[in-house]
Structures are given as C-alpha cells and as structure tokens.
Length: 330
Image (cartoon, rainbow, N blue to C red; front, side, top):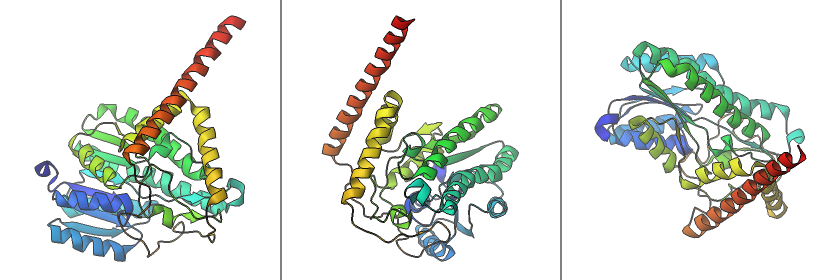
C-alpha cells in the first residue's frame, strides 16, 4: 500500500487542523510528497516539521481558499516543486450557526465563499495540470451535510448541497478522461476543532450531534481513494444510513433534525457570540481532534439503525400510500 502512495505529490487544503491534519499524518506515514495549505502558516510549519521527521517531503504554501489568485499560485508552486500534481484534496471549510436572518449577511457569504467557491477554485486551479498529465485524482471532503440539511446552518447546508451537484456535473464533463478521477467523501459528524472554530451566533455552546467519529476515518478514506478512486465514499457507517434515511423520508428527516436542534438549544449552556475563524485564522485548538463526546458506540449504532430504518419504513409507506391515492383519484 505504502509503495503506491510513496512520492505522490498531494496537495491538501485546510491542512492545519481536523480532518486535514489527520490526512496529512496518514499520507506522510506512507511517504507522500505533501503540499500543505491553510491560512495559518505558523501552524503549517510546525506540522511540516513533524511530517519531515516521519520521512515525508513537505512544501508549505500559505493559502486562503477564498482568494482565487492564491489558489492558482498554490497549484503553480506544487507543480513547480515536483513537476506534477498527483492528488488534490479539497478540505478547507468553515461553519456558521445561528438563526438565518439574525446572522450577519457577511457570515453567510464567507461560508459560501469558503466551502463552495473554495472547492470550485481548487478544481479550477488543478484540472489544467491533470489534463496536461492525462491523470490525477481530485478528492473532496464534502460531509453528509451534502444530503441532510443542518438547521441553523443554512449557508453551510447550501454550500454542501451545491458541492454535491457541482462535482456530479464535473464528473460528467470528465468522462473522456478515464484517468482523471473525482472522489466525493460524505463523512458523518467528526470530532474536530471545527465546532470550536465555528462562527457562533446562537448564544449557546455548540456541540456536534452524535454519532461523532474520529477524523482519522476521513484520512483513511483519502488514502483508500488514492489507491482505489471510487466516485463516492461514506466514511463511517452512519453517513450512508443518513443518506438512505433522507432518500426514503426527506420530510421526516428535516423535521427530526429541526426538533433535535431546537431541543438542544433549550438546554445548552450560554456562550458569547463570535465570528470564530470565518474572517481570519485562529491560534487555538489547532489539533486533529476536538475531544467531543459521545463517540459512536455499539449502543448508539443500534439506536441509529433502528431510527433510520423506522424513518425509512414510514417514508416508504407514505410514498406507496400517496401513489395509491393518486391512482384512485385519477
């Protein structure tokens, strides 16, 4: 496995913390030549030093993914460094939580610019190099938010739904390039510092919704996508179950998630409102894990499966009943 990744040139955006940091360590252990990008250069340099100790070559390029010129420079520097780009991992993202019309409009814009346009900018920057080489793998860490809406995270949800559509469109364009692969990852909630870095306009302490997975599941999926570039992957079993549940009973899923969020806010502790890392990088909790609880336990897995199966059965029943009523009325 390591021999197939060794010396591959891999660009990772949002590498300084969370899933990006976990992916960096995973690929460094396999000898990849890493190009690390984020807004926080000091943290990237520390991360690069750790990877070099492992034995990986590393290039650090300070990059704001909302700056398209910076993204093009990132691709240029990566290509100039080794004469090729084998893999590009779109990972940088932000979250802003709050009632839609009460949040600053600029916060919504920043989420869209980072999560959606940042990924599109990455694809735009790297595809000319992939086509010049005739090969390459573009990996997008989208999240299950691409299928299941997050109430009080409207811009986040919009960006993730749009990413899924955009990359499906791009895959259609690339059918004449069999060695250029686009791989979309849809993990469930991750134990990363992202929730601590979020723009929080709720006035309440934010916590990720269970089940919560270790970000290493994304790192392992990136590794596997490099080795076997399937079009979509669902790191952690819960994300695929969420997708199926939403497909069978979308209205129920939306109502349930809304009720859960509102119920949480009623009991959550108070917190000061903050822009978090939306408009500038932060210097705290720049780690792989955010130490959130609970993790996904066997008991939680059973409850999740039962709940989603129930939602699916109800949704299927409603679908069949509505079809029967429609035929009867006609």
